[in-house]
Every structure is written in C-alpha cells, then in structure tokens.
Amino acid sequence: MMRKHMDAGHIEYLRSLVEPERIQVGNEISEDYSHDELGGVKSSPEVLIQAASEQEISRIMKYAYVEKIPVVVRGAGTGLVGASVAVCGGIMLETTAMNRILELDEENMTVTVEPGVLLMELSQYVEERGFFYPPDPGEKSATIGGNISTNAGGMRAVKYGVTRDFVRGLTVVLPNGEIETMGGKIVKNSSGYDLKDLIIGSEGTLAVITKAVLKLLPLPEKSVSLLIPYNSVGEAVHAVPEILKLKGNPAAIEFMEKEVISFAEDYLGKRFPDTASPAYLLLTYDGNSKIQIEEECRKTAGYCLEHGARDVLLIDTDERKESVWSARGAFLEAIKASTTEMDECDVVVPRDKVEEFILHVHKLAHEFRIRIPGFGHAGDGNLHIYICRDELGEEEWNTKCSGIFKKMYKKADELGGAVSGEHGIGYAKKTYFKEQAGENMIRLMRGIKRVFDPDGILNPGKVIDDAQ
Image (cartoon, rainbow, N blue to C red):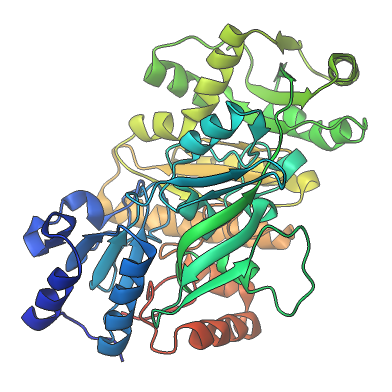
C-alpha cells in the first residue's frame, strides 16, 4: 500500500541525498510541474528533485521502495495525456539535467545518450557528423527519455518506423533501486524475453530510464517535398494508399486541412505557399540518388494530377521547406492558441480507413456543434484530432467532450484501430484504453506491472493502474 502523504522525516532524508538547489518541497515547486503541455490533468508532487545521475536515482528509488512513496519521472513536460503528472503526490524526478551525449560510435552506428537530451539537440549533433536519427515527432523540444517512454513516432514513421525501431539498448533503474542494462550495441538478440521492448512505451510505469543506446543511419544527401492540394480531405487521404502502391518510398505523408494551416499562419506570422484549397497532402522523399528521388516525385505527381489533385507544388529550396515544415510543426500550438481549452484524440487506424474516420469526425463536429480541427500522419494512419472548447461553459464542455471521445474511440475500434498511435495513454485515456483492450489484456499488463513494481510506487494511476 502506497503512502498517501510524505512526512517531515521523508523530506529530511531526501534532502540529505541531493544538493539543496536541486530539491524543492511543497509551495516551493512551480505550478508548471503540476501539469503537462495540454494541462487537462493537474496535480502537484510533494517533492521535486532535479536528478543528476543514475546512482542518485538509484538511491532515491531504494528509499522510495522501502517507504512505499510514489515516484513519477518527468522530462520536458511536453506530453498530452498526463503521464508525467504526479496524480498521487510523492516524489517527482525531473531528468532534464541528465542531458549528456555520452558516445558516438561510428563503427557500430550508435549514439549513447542520457534521458534528458532533447530530440532537436540529438538530431543536430548526429547530422553535423553525417548521421541521421529518423524518429521525428512534432515536438522537437521533447526529451529522448520521454520519446522512449511513449514510443514516439512522428512524420517519418511511414518509411523509417518509430522510436522502438531505433533503441538498441537501455539502462534503467528498477522501482527497488537496482540498475539493469537491457540490450546494447548488438544488432539482433534472441536471448530470452525482450525486456527492453517492455520498457519502451511503458510511460514510466515499469522503470526509470537513465541511458539509451540508439541506432543511427547515414544522413540522406537530398530530400524533396511535394505539397498537393485537393478539393476535400476525403479526396486527399483516399489517394494515400494508391501513392504507396507506386513503389516509391516516401519518408513522410502528412494530411492537413485549410483551417489548421490558417491557424499556423496566424500563430507564426508567416504565409504558407498555398492556402486556396480545402485539404492538402505533404510528402517528402529522401535518399542519396537525385535521379531516384526525381523519378519518385514524377510518378507521384503524375498519379495525383490524374486522380483529382488540383496541383502539385515542388518544395525543394531551403526557404520553401522552412515555410512548409515550420507550419506543420506548429499545428498543435496553433490550434491551442485558437481556443480557450482543448482536448486531443491521438487515434490510429489502418491507412485505408483514414478517410472514413476523418469523415466521421466531421459528422461529430456538426452533431455536437463544436470545432474539431485535425491533421495527421496519413502514411501510417495516426490522426491528431483536437476538440476545442471556445466559449462553452464547464458543464457543456465536459458533456460534449465525453460524448465525442466515446464515439470517436468506438469508431476507431470498429475500423481496427487503437486509442493511441504515439502520445500514449497516461492518465487521461485510461478509461477508453481499458474498454478497447478488454479484461484479459489488462490482466496481463497488470501482471507485468506487479513483477516490475509489486507495491505500485512508480507512476501510479497511469495506463492500466487505478491507484489514487
């Protein structure tokens, strides 16, 4: 049984473990640490510790394990489902100070990092040295530890895969304080259960990540994007499976609607290359052969123009790329800036069901008389849908949100989809996840949780855990 509250003795002991400037208690803790980026789930930790090392985390976890104190790990706080919120109080371990790039191994094509390294820092570091780390979630200021904890995907997943595909090894601190290494620099491993893959995507409920060995690729020499306008979002997303049948290999296939582009223009104060159409596809091709990339673009452009596209715009200069992709990267913040409050649905469906799901969302917006803008990764079926509160009162907002989410997740389930494609379950989506997963799957997951964390102290109340 976890402790509900920490006492003066607990706090005094924790102060003895870390430097005074790296621990805050009670009202000393900034309100920023009570929520994540979306802010829908709020609760403050009793103690905030800015962790400095693996050994320090081990000592803290050993004490928390014996005293049965809840612990939640937080990176940059860019999550959207409350996974890094201390819903049971206790200790929050903030890992952004553990931000060293420890090794670049050019022969094995790996980079070893601490969990607080930011995605944008890692990408710049390896690209300056001729390497490429493909996972590309929209929030570039997220930490690598957070990306691993949610198995983040992003815009390049259609060609390269998700974070799990690029994690070769992890060092973790278990809830009892023991330090374990899972995997390493080896390319393949058939030695027993893959515990590393259990940690990836577990949202901080099984262990604390302190080090990661990541796979790298050679940096592609050239990339070109195509911006393709359509008369409707249905026509745009309907084209995606056919584009993939052309035997090209796009690194990204994004879809967006005019409304969201307008939000981004207002938010950034920059103009998008084309805003005359209701819907768009944005594709990127990359590689080392200019001839091959040009041929792939030619085939795609030809098919799209023959099957309903209004135009095909070539995005091949640095200026145009920055204009288009900076707008795409700002969609979340732009929608957030357009309303008083929002909630999000990070659903994923089979690629050939994207059109049906988007049209369903449009019907829900009309039925509930509420704005529901969206965009997403059409190439892998991961859609980002945002319900906007605007001027609704609290009761009406909560009622409409609940009704819309139930209908969206029911539709996703009918289409063979899942509750989350890359943002995770956290606290906010537990109910919907449990309904979709079913009793047997939840029972198995809870069994795994008990093996790692028998007293349930690590990130309680998240994913499959009902601790309060």
